[in-house]
Image 1 (cartoon, one colour):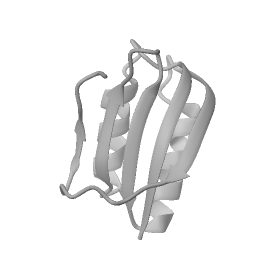
Image 2 (tube, helix red, strand yellow):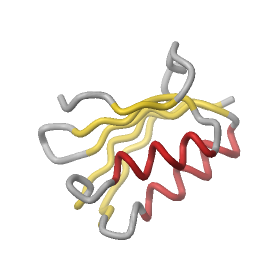
Image 3 (tube, one colour):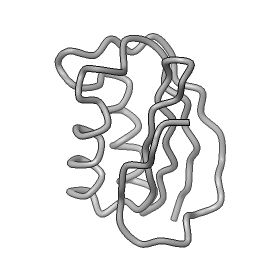
Length: 91
């Protein structure tokens, strides 16, 4: 099991990034959440089997078709208490 906290920068808001990430995370059976930040970044917590988390992290570096990811700050995280993957409100 692995858990990561991500801060994703670039053109990642207004391009469907959160919906895209939710779909992929659920397909990979990853728990956690994703939300927009008022500074223009996307923040996420991913938790699941190490291979699945790494696969989603690789995909996040590309993002959906309209996104342009310039950087991802990655750190270890505590696994979320909730099961499943959801969008949270912007902070």
